[in-house]
Length: 166
Image (cartoon, rainbow, N blue to C red; front, side, top):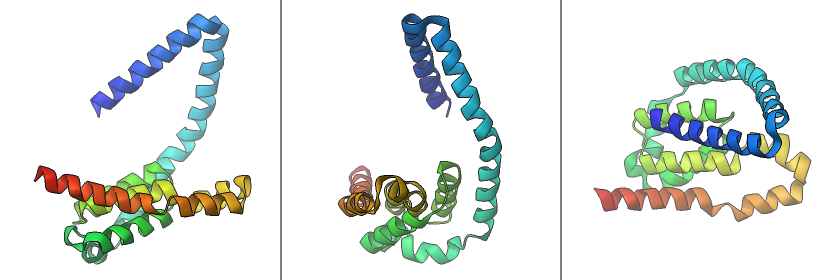
């Protein structure tokens, strides 16, 4: 976690230097104001998202899921996990803790890779709330069909990499 923070802060510092050189104080001030506006919204939503994920984790029937997406479930488990990911509601602050709890409850690593990939590619809530209304149903359908293989491919690749490193 510390390494990720160092990388992010390094990128922020490099971008601040670039903005400072190109636009000076006005550019830095505008960027700071934009960051504060975004931060205010997150300050309200983030704690609620974490709390919602914590509640959801308490009622999620992990024991009932493991037989279907456990390490021995193979390709069918990868497909089931991909579909689960597509219908998993919320953003990363809810989805990643849920995926972690399912993984810790006994799900297979390739299945969780497929779940997260399904969530990032298909996310039904985002398709319905943003993509289809903004881009149109034809575009949304085309993108979804063109992306169908991605969670399966990610899960199978993860399974192969695990087998290579075992």
